[in-house]
Image 1 (tube, rainbow, N blue to C red):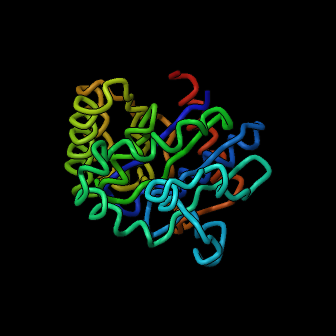
Image 2: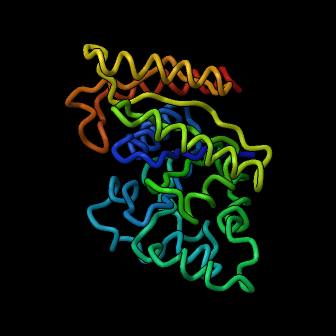
Length: 250
């Protein structure tokens, strides 16, 4: 059965999409079969592989709202990577589902109910998420075995991280007791600044008190990390190091 990892943070510009794609590419280098599920209506992951989301006639929306078989609409984007794409049809999912509790009595189980059978096909399933806690974020977390939290240090980031972790723990306690927080992964870090040094120290202390791993691997704040996706070998090597840390923690 494939392992499911949700990459989530409500912090924008935290390289969630970059993390998803880079982990997928490193897993593919090992010959692992990977599925990326894009749960973000902005379709950041999907647009990393195509020029327009109009390339995808069906998306995650049809899977969770119209009972379309997800295996029928996954797109091969690499020899070992498939994509279950998103598009802007997902914008209205919250209203459709929450407004119809009789039809959707378990609103956070939609992705899990439709996609669990895909575990038999893939070694890893990676979920990209919106930068807020929504119905789709909750669905992604509910389907996952683990949540990985990319984290970009700034003046308010630790407070934001504390809220994210509290949200995940509260959700887990109510809906998904077996969920694990894989850890916090720092991105866009500049250790040449006193501010980042202080924030990283405070963040690490906080993670220790919460018994949450904070990975030694981090992405430095360089021009190579300014975009949503870098294909430079040295950039991918950082995510290979992250992948090794994730495996050691299993």
